[in-house]
Length: 346
Image (cartoon, rainbow, N blue to C red; front, side):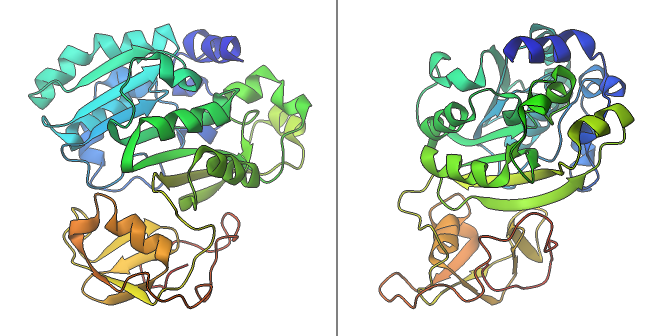
């Protein structure tokens, strides 16, 4: 599969126009504040972008970030502007042709930004322990439509957990399916290269995340994907695919369900680009200046991470009241839309 992916992204694809589906290039939800950052990225880098979502979480200034499967470097150069000269962004990819584009444009971006805070490493995302990266040294790890291409997704998640600092997060977009992918689809080189053949069944992803040490994965946003190529449509049959962004926090002792400890938070409205509300995930749009009840896991995802100074925390873990009312941890993709209104936890 490594050879299939390297050939597809290194030789067969020369630009996004060569893709046979739009699965790996959805930018429909691109926020307005991100667009000026992309305008400062070299056109050659942009033309070789094959991502499927948005991997620019908030509060990145000064952070150390790792991009898995960085390709030609679009997200690396976007993130570089957000972390600033005090931060660092490292991109990892296994495809020589893609890395060559990323590295050949590094000086151009350093001049455009006024600082050079990026570097690129050739390697496999299933073998992060071989890349001489210090364990527990990254604030955030991102990936954009790449984990589905890996033949060993468990190793990817375990490697990510090892490299993250306590309280750090894996924030990534990828393609998922509504059922396990049959071999005839998985073994088709075009479908695999188009990010469909290696898509994970959602429940299998949740199971693998827990095995790797990431309890309570949070779905940030999701979008049903359509395949319009007639030949590929016939091959995939009734399979349904989704582009989804998840955030996984490296926090010890998170619980497997949303438990009620009579806790709440007050968002102070101080996170950049989020003055009125902060969106933790698809089910948590936390309004500014209002008491917002949360479960124990959500309380910790805010208090024990880089978000802490932007919230006031109410309560502790001294009293337990059972399962948090309305817990939606098992809601599947796209059944409830994201909202900017105040919703109770889960």
